[in-house]
Amino acid sequence: MKGKDIISILDFDADELIDIFELAKDIEGNPEKYRDTLHGYVLALLFFEPSTRTMYSFQTAMARLGGASLVFSDTSKTSIAKGETLGDTIRMFDGYADAIVIRHRIEGAAKYAADIAEAPVINAGDGTHHHPTQAVIDLYTIWKYRGVIEGLNIGVLGDLKYGRASTSFIYGVSLFKPSKLYLISPEELRLKEEVKSDLDRMGVDFVETTDLEGSLKELDVLYVTRIQKERFPDPAEYERVKGSYVVNMELLKNAKEGLMVMHPLPRVDEISTDVDSSPYAYYFKQARCGVPIRMALLKLVIIGDKNGCR
Ligand code: NCD
Image 1 (cartoon, helix red, strand yellow):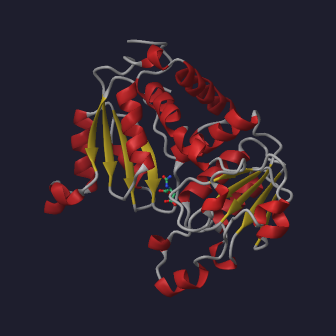
Image 2 (cartoon, protein in one colour):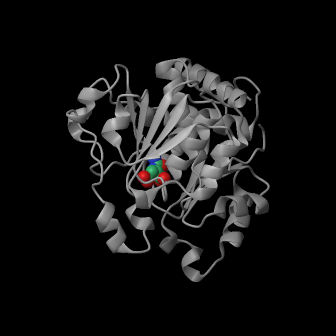
Image 3 (spheres, rainbow, N blue to C red):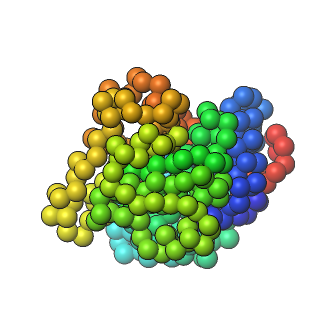
């Protein structure tokens, strides 16, 4: 994987993902073995959109591998404010860093950066398109706690139209042949047609529904997402759909035993806090998986499969 750009979760196949999971598991079990793995290497973190988990977990991952990070998250303090283009900014950081992580509101921005930069580029979210490293984390969480990803009934709830984390998760689980995908959303926020065509092509059995309660009893995993307020062209449309679904303990009375409730976070009000202390809650565990997975990905794209220290 040395030098590989990570733009979409479909840049991987299931076997490659399992190899990444194995490495992340080894990192979790033996952190001291990896302490100097990226000593002397530099990661550029270019965040043109807000971020908490993604930015800080990449930074933590780089620090735990012994490397350094250049963090750029407030464009008002950089030459972007003077009118520098994205292309020129990428060229600059390509000269400073061994890998570039980028989040941008424009779909295709990460691909554009990857075409310019020699260093590997990791997409940390491009508009409503892709968020591949989040999907690797989500799949790892299922693999780690459930032992298997294949053959499950997976529900994805919320804003399937604008959500990039949900789109990448849907593609990601599809690589593992789910038994059935339940795409649960208000009519207005259904999955984009192009993604549905891809699922058809991949031979995935999926159903679109507005009925959360009716679907719930079938599910092994319920992946909940936030309605992406900032992506609505019309605020009135957001007002119509906000608060459409709330997952709470009352609803979960009908859940299968062992159901995993997941969420890429941040949550607004779509999972009630009474679920947090229940055995269904996996979202904080999922967020913690961000560090070992991003450590594994950084090691692989920067130095490849070489073991241990440099
Ligand atoms: C997601 C994102 O930025 O797409 N957040 C994240 O990286 N965990 C999800 C969201 O903002 O709803």
